[in-house]
Amino acid sequence: MSSTDRPGVISAASPGELAESVGHTATGEWFTIDQERIQLFADATLDHQWIHLDAERAASGPFGAAVAHGYLTLSLLPHLAASLIEVGQVSMAMNYGLDKVRFIAPVNAGSRVRATTELNAVEDTALGTRVNSTVTIELEGSSKPALVAETVSIYVPEQ
Image (cartoon, rainbow, N blue to C red):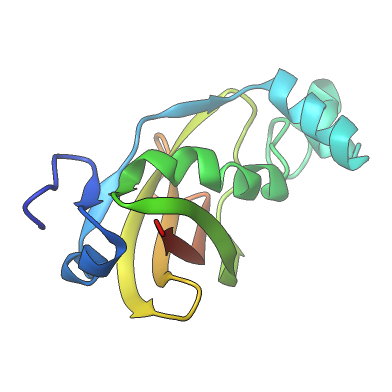
């Protein structure tokens, strides 16, 4: 841990100090994915499959209940993981991309999920400090995670 780490958070005073945290992990708070959020995501993306929206039909379907869209769970990564890495002296942090995503277990409507982030690599670039992390979305009560994603972020230092 760097000297500024506190439980549940990976902290660095500046982007240049992030390399000291490679291999460290942080775990966030539980977050409920309810049916209303699933409906709003379906409306926003025009993905109205019955496995997401028809609880009665979904109860007899392959997952035994209505489930969140995989891309809904993925879209929550910034929210679920945002508080897990704190970096000082940054003008902005941005998502740079994903190297790999796997949807492992379905997220039933009403389930709770949380993110665990592990810093894998840090590299200085012309734009800023690039951070490669593995983010695992845990599913409460399940031995399998909902998803695992290898994320890439860039922390742009203050000028």
